[in-house]
Length: 297
Image (tube, rainbow, N blue to C red; front, top):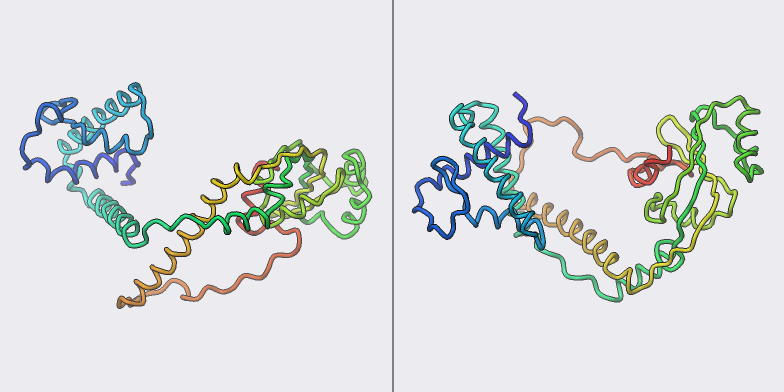
């Protein structure tokens, strides 16, 4: 049996609250709703609302209604004895492990210190295409088969400075294609190639590979969209903090592994991953490039 997220959350709630049945009866001021013989308290509501900053009364009522529905399903799960089924028990145990692991990670890793202003200023200065010289881009995209892209076509496209000339080059080579318009902000483009996009002139073409397709991006127009140091500061801080958190997490997980005795009785792949060859110029095989290409086809 494959558990859906809602059912799983219900069963977890049932398992985790089972021990609470032995606790003292809640005071009336804590109880927000009664569902048969069970009660929903203000603490349960506040726990969920902790993920909704500045919740309005309508949102609070919606969450309370959801807790009532959840309690009804918890009671139905108990009636059906779903918490005794092997797959359900395994799912509950796995969820508990994930919750405990997440709590331990937050405690051990902690929150990284705020980036220094010098680091923020340096990041701003090193990425003008994202901030001081940021632009919004308008492209005309031509999607063709990768096998159709060759040196002859690349040479023909070098002088194709308008969409009409690109279509003429593709038609002349009897290459099938689809075309569409695409508007992108700087941060929506493949980050590693952003400097190349920033250096494009109107009519220039960027050829990027994605899977078995080649995406030809012809620049149609740009508009200045500068972000000031003041406005960029919180964005850069968040980015640097996330990077630092990932670095710390990797270092502390490595330390935990080194301090523990870990023995694999069966392996499915080598411990050291085989290094992938570097992508060719213009290749979009990197995950960050793929993210930037979404919606361009």
